Amino acid sequence: MSVKLISEKVSYQSTPQALSFVILGKIERWKESLLVAWCVAWVFCGGIVISEYLASTVRESRMMYVIFLIFWAYFLWRVGRVTLFRRGGNELIRIEGGELTLKRSIFTFGKSKSYYLENIEGLRIIELDKKSIAYTYENTWWVMGGERIGFDYQGRFVKFGMQLSPKETKQVFELLRRRLNSDLKKSS
Image (tube, rainbow, N blue to C red; front, side, top):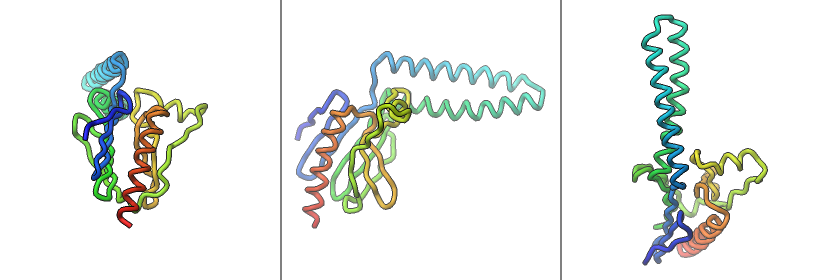
């Protein structure tokens, strides 16, 4: 069967055996350029601190540089991961063979997680108060997150569908809900 578009960002394919979605992590070109510039500036600043660390002979100063560089490396990892995801990442959702498989990949690299359909409970759209800080943060383009759909699975809450618009969320949710219900009826 052919691939159908929900939006520029979301596509899906449905066959009698499987339903799969691809949610692209792409953003506007200017936003992507800002992320790359941020990453380059972050590396440059870290390079200056590393050179100061190497030039310093005072023990207390070197300790301060090490502490700073630990935080710097953590945030470099965070901004680097978001930059790579926005340049070539996507989220894959697939229902097939009695399992729901989720995968966040960056340039095809990523780990899949599978969930048995019979153990999935309470598939729902995640609603956040539009006036909350969490809503604002989750909708920013410089972070990975903002999942819109979730379910309970063996005592924990699983989220997916990063930064979908309300219209995209409804369409993806309805297709998933229908397939989940029909697959569960077939297996009963």
